[in-house]
Image 1 (cartoon, rainbow, N blue to C red):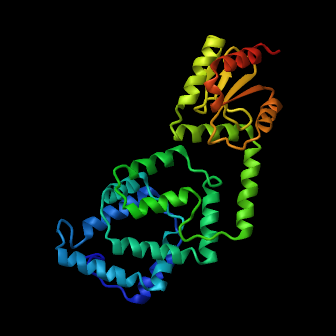
Image 2 (cartoon, helix red, strand yellow; image 1 turned 180 degrees about the horizontal axis):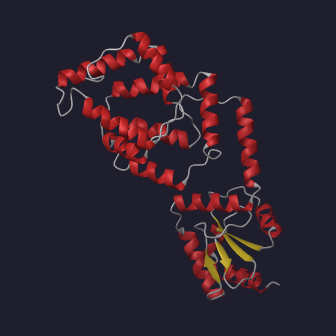
Length: 309
């Protein structure tokens, strides 16, 4: 008869649980156990009614309210790694599933409660460090991207995500010490030329930067004064010392030309900007939007600048 249909005492169940707690099973072993369980199940081949499913869900929900049961399950799963097949199956099952607002609110509240405990924060921090110092692999990014395709979010969810990306963590208040650490880390990163170029370029591309009317006009004047010598790079194609010039000399001469809008650059000290380009080994010419009305004067300035050694 085997063990089919046998009811174990609570003491026996507890002993089995303690024996298996923390054990890491191979994918092959887990699959064998799953197939054996399916073959031995009294429900094998049977479809549960909606009422039966509701009863099981309710019993599970009530059981999970018991901290001792949650702790036991957590320990039992510690160290277990799910196979790609299992992950794909769960992803496929949940993809496109619509959750009730009550369900979403409950999940959100539980997450907030967990993050209030120092033990949980420490555990999450260490876990993220273990997977590569907070960096997500390209493969993981692809999985996340695929999972979110077609997912419809509420307007409030979009607002929350937007606030989070702008540094306005929803419900999160950083201490002055934490803010200082973030600031210092940003300053250290910005000292890295590769980081500066990557960040500015990504920002410009994300904004779908296109030449403005004044920039188009200045481009025409540059072509008149120096045919084919200057290229538009205001879309982030070229970054110099963390700065994004509007035009750069295309023949290798270290010269850049900036188009300063009267509104956006009002009150700016152009000598500081020119000085920063000079520090990087570039000569810099700044043309103001209001100066474009005097084309001949601008053409003369461009010619003189271009001929400077």
